[in-house]
Length: 619
Image (cartoon, rainbow, N blue to C red; front, side):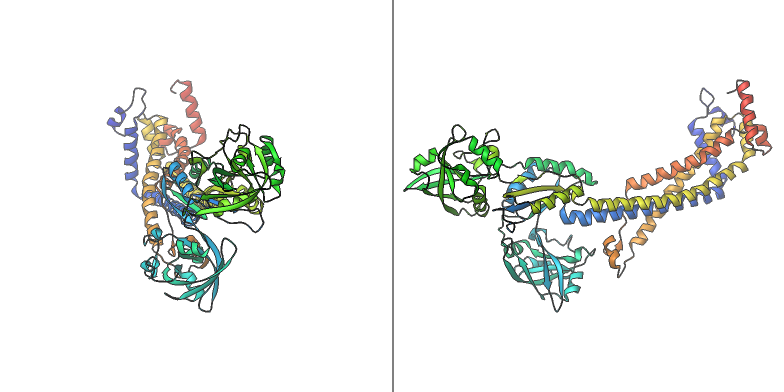
């Protein structure tokens, strides 16, 4: 330390940071070999930390973005329909997908894309081989080369209509079925109405698979698959929504909650014409829930005129209000025909019913109304979907303030949101077993539906982090021992700078800054070395990775270094190195200048020197 260094002190005699950094840099350059050796050890530890973190981040990216998001998106909207409540009357379908899409587009400003989800398990028969797989509907506009890694065939054959039921499969399924391009695959599946359907598929493309999960899939054009399953174009099994800028699965939950809130169902019904005795009257047809509570609510809020309203729970008869009965000249035991125009196709739906009760709606029902039990109402409603009565000004539409609102059949029943995978699984089991009448609509986020996979990814991250930190602590022990030896070797230097006026705090700061600077530059070098290692390892292609293929992308190890993880690695290493150097530096600062000049460093002399300075008022 020269005279200029002594001048660079603040008013309290403390050296400025600029002076300390200059001295620390000078000392590092003066002891080049020692600095290089310690730096190499630190850089090696940082390299391991960067590679390990990038590997675990890559695994998490595969689990979240390559498996979960591709499979079910960030948000999934699905439904279970039971028209009659019978055990075998269950369809995974909602009838008006555009109604759900409109709600999605209105309430989610950050949509990347959404697609229709349609999958069904079936057994495929190839050339002398069979395999269980998943038939997946793919919309033509989403059949793009950017994500479809073709290795054989032409993607144009999937959309040009030249082949019967063109399909695209992964190389694993090609091998399992022993097929090649333009071969035929046979299958037998079940439609949504329970009918057995046989079909032939033409292989027009083979894709490279990134994992064993993908090998099970066979893509079929969405329209062809819908026809095979007897679904209409406007119907959907599920809607899959992928959002922009999602870095954490927890970020999806508020958006799923918002969609759930927006899908509050309205009262289901049809507006059309009721006919009897040669007369026709515009009327609204509604369903009443026949559960004891809802039916009792309905009966208690109207005034029976003739017949028995309780019979709605166990007969195929209907009830009409006095306004309609008088207009048509009908009573209990009469028959009427109700017709309306469907929403899709504008076809005329017409059904005849027997009247088993007439009631006065008092002030709650002020227009001509036909009331069907829900077991009779829902099969007609779902198979001949009407226009929404809420949008028809002349229709009778009970709002949620109406005393009868809870008694009427709704467009769907919105299932309560869940927060964990365990809750979600219990909910789905209950939905599948429940003998309800109507449609259950479920909104789920990737967090609860795939929390098991997310927990596995987090566990992998934690295991990797702990293993690397154990290794690095071992390295730090060596670095700490080296630093203590270095400080002991520099006791005469410490004595000299203490003798010419450097304070204890400045000595401590000098040594800690030396180590911190060395750790920082070594960490930067370790990061660069780690990125090189990641690049080289990522270039290796494994010909037959087997079960490990699920942890790879294109048969290569998937590393995902991020700025945050690299910054955390540098801060962690610099922080730990600082703590490692602090205590040896503190001990060195407490040495007696005379002992330091003689190269003596003991705890007792340091304590004696401290006591003398306190007595003399020098501290």
